Image (cartoon, rainbow, N blue to C red; front, top):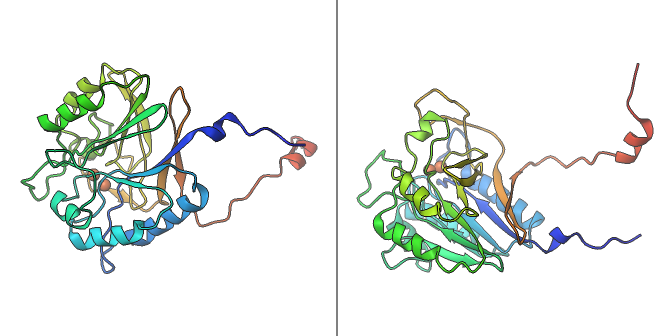
Length: 287
Ligand SMILES: [Fe+2]
Ligand SMILES: [Fe+2]
């Protein structure tokens, strides 16, 4: 018996990978080799989602923002089956990044921001890196007037398309107080820019956790990282709390009337399929 393919088979698929934190071979983060974890993540994505239209790298690409770390990123992400859209996070440094990725999309003001359109959606990626000047230990984000004006313009003429906005730093508090201390420090300006667009959806990184919610009418989603993950600690004002959990990335599906965000864990164990027929045949086991 044959079945027609489901309508969802026609939906555009976008992959989101946030907070890669690439280091060099002799450096680990809480004992984790972030390059190896990125390789595993990309291998998983290429195997399971070769039909993805694009992959967005949502900032914190290199842990120390160094050119040699970006060179490793370039080597690992070359020859993927889909185009890669890079973004900046607080660990990044724009000049070092551009020295390795000179063809990355830039605005006239030199920020790493771009627009990518699909049939029914408009993807807008923002650069929330605060600087230059860059201050050591400063990890909150910022959108200057130039970047905000660019965003306002990018939201014009949508023609029925649903806007999907990507920003590394969340513009709101999550309750994880250590990270809330280093959010987008002028987040209200971003929320104000999005508020006239009730169908907009905001994607953020930075927290290294999968979280969803809405703030002042704007719905949003965050994904875990391929590297170290954040801790659900609602009281400690420490942004460096991390935990070794499996790598993750986002699988974003774009039906014509909305957006669906899945989170995909990268597990090395084989997937075990439940035998639904035998379960049905046996029924519940009652002593
Ligand atoms: Fe990060
Ligand atoms: Fe970050």
